[in-house]
Length: 137
Image 1 (cartoon, helix red, strand yellow):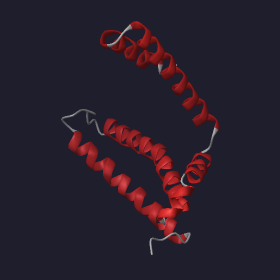
Image 2 (cartoon, rainbow, N blue to C red):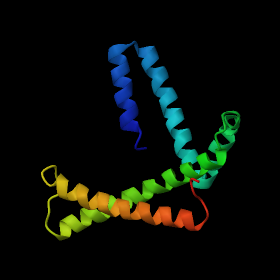
Image 3 (cartoon, rainbow, N blue to C red):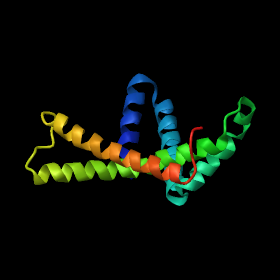
Image 4 (cartoon, rainbow, N blue to C red):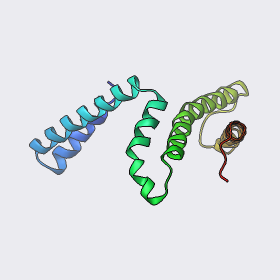
């Protein structure tokens, strides 16, 4: 139910900019779409989502675009979301342990540590993909 404030905000903005009927209609559609998306993401794995996108991209073979490569990119990008979240949490905890405030003033230090750990993860991912035989040649 984290979407309720967003839907209420959208309803209020639409009431101000449009009429009440359209505001209610847009809010109902937004509520339905958000709930379907949440249910789909909770019940489907990353590989299932990537497989669905691969099937949807099959017509791109006409333009010599590989749906298998799109599937791999989707899997990697969706997997990176949790990695990014974990890395940011670890950097935040490290800053707290070193008594560095997590604010805009110290953003240069925080982002440097975050991007350093992120680049390390990306290099590990690249090495594992090359080891499994995926390459751009």
